[in-house]
Each structure stands twice: as structure tokens, then as C-alpha cells.
Image (cartoon, rainbow, N blue to C red; front, side, top):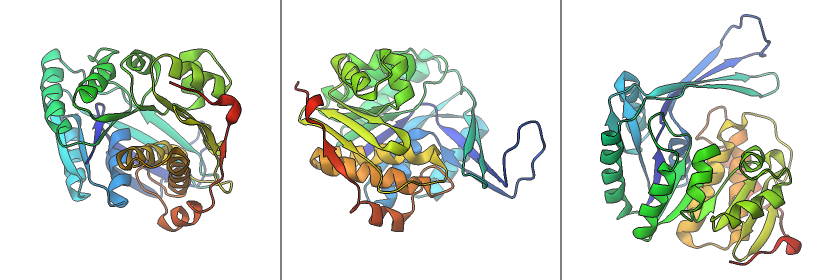
Length: 311
């Protein structure tokens, strides 16, 4: 079982417009509403792939009840822990003209020390049945910057591998705990390490404690630095669409590969194929199954000998 953690779960609302023009009014022709947050999206992708996934995290208020009900409708096992505050909403506006997405994220409910304690107790119990745990997204107000570091440590004590996808102080604080895989994008890498070059930044991040770095280069694919070597993997073709769920699809592939012990070139091929197929779908957590099957046999993976690293 793969356990996904979404500490700042949300009700995602997506509006589709013909084109997005600043300082004008827009007619919305389609609206999607579903449970979201990065870990929830990862679980959706895993479920579609036929891999058992459990969703945990925090939820509160009427919004929390709505997102929990949507999870059940989607057939995802819900282990969300209640909090007193109201769960957040996110609003995404997708332009049909060019596929670009504009996202508005609320900060989320304030979490008390007691609520955090109750969550960590639930999390520790769930770890006993997990092969891999995915820790994704932002931290809600009230949680310390080292919240993910604590969860990584608890997972390691249970012998469970970790995949971390966060940014800023939460990412920096978690590195010393030694997450097995960290998946930042280029901007997140630069913010934490000060390096603009993705390869240099990934190497610096690994030196801070992460075992493997899989850096997203957007439409240029992935750059991975692992104990076994370094690779680049690129999409087989240029795509237009909604990129908001691509990173979560990538994380789902990384977690699945970690669970099965697949070699890194094969894992990266799957990650690029899934994330590219996710761009072709209008909402995060989905992917185009036909495109995924086509891409996974066409993703080039190149070993980068000059960047080879060792533990």
C-alpha cells in the first residue's frame, strides 16, 4: 500500500474559459469541483493505475466534509483527521485558447498542537501497512516548518520509504531527516540552494541529506541524481494543455517505482510518460490513458556520466 499525506487538503474548483484576459469579465462554460491537494491527486493517479493507495491528512468544516464525500465517491480510502478550522479551497482558471492555468490557493485552516498530535498518532498506525509514503504540498498555518521532517523520521523508524514534494522552509527543514526521494521543480531548487543550474542545485540538495533528487524541468522533463547514477528523461513530444497535475502524476510514478524496486531509468520513463499524459487532461489527478501507453515506450532516458554521484 502507498500512503499519501495531504496536510493541507482542499476542495479544488476549476473554471474553464475561452481565454483569460486580465481586467475583464469572463463567461465560465464548464466547472469541475473535486477533492484535491497534491497527495490526493497522487492517490487518484495511483488508483487509476490499479495500485492501492490510502489518503490521509487534515480536513475541517463543511468544505472538509465535501471533499471527504468526493473522495468516497471516487473510491479512495479516506483516513483524513478532523480539525476545527475550515479546509481551504483552490480556484484554477484554465484558458481553452492556450491551455494555460492560473491558480489561486488559500492558506488553509490553523492547526493546533493537539490536532497535530492526533494526526501523527493516526499516521504512525497507517505506516504499519505502507510500503511507501508520499508527503506532498504546503503546510497549513500552525504547523512547524519541520513537520515533514518529523513525518520522514517516523516513516524511517517503521522502515517505510518516503517521497517528498514540497518547497521553501518545509523542504529545507525536511532534508536533514533523509527523505528517500525529493521531487522539486527548478524554481524550488533555486530558492533552497541558490543555484540556477538544475544539475548543480540537485547535487546541492542531495548533499543536504536527501538520498535521491528528481528535479522537474517542466516541458524538458526530469533530471535525477541517485546513489546509482544520474539520468535525464524527456517527453517524446511537445504538449499543450493543463500542467497543474503533471507534478503529482510524476510523484505517483516515483512512489510506484520505489514500491516495486524498479531500476531508475524505468522509473523515470514512467514518471515522464505519466506527467506528460496528465497535461492532456483538464483536471489534476487524471491522465490520458491512451497517451500514457504511447509515451511510455517512447521516452528517451540518457545517463549523465559527468554528474554521477555516490552516497
